[in-house]
Image 1 (cartoon, helix red, strand yellow):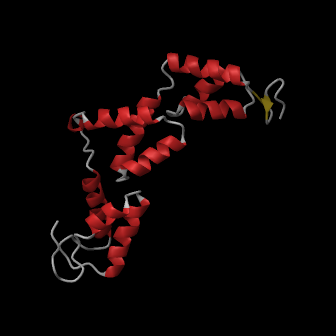
Image 2: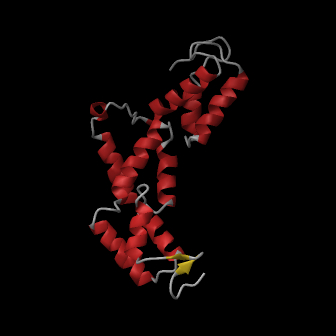
Length: 182
């Protein structure tokens, strides 16, 4: 690995802008991800910052748009807002971009896009619970054994829901033959 003439594993590296554009050619990425990649290639900080600024100006990098797409996908998978925000922050998306993307999603009619995205945290948690019940061969009206109840709780936890939300949603399950209020 030579940084002087930018040979990495016998691959000649072009300009920071070119390498950033190549990295973005396959999918959307955050500015932080592009910066990290360019630094791995050994580009100096000044060159990296200039390349990222140019890529933003040319519309190749847009952290808010990335956050919007990520949140939509995450909500379709039944993940919580907390987990989604954490994952976005981990890859360098600032809180303002995340909040703007959430606001945009909450105020957009996604039915027009032929999709159904549930914004309500509780409703998403109930849908996740319904999928677990269905895969286990149960319905929300059935008496659910402790083993299936445990599966529901673990799945909701893995999706990032708070313990209060988990027990609020899972608490509606019929575990002892007495139907709980929803």
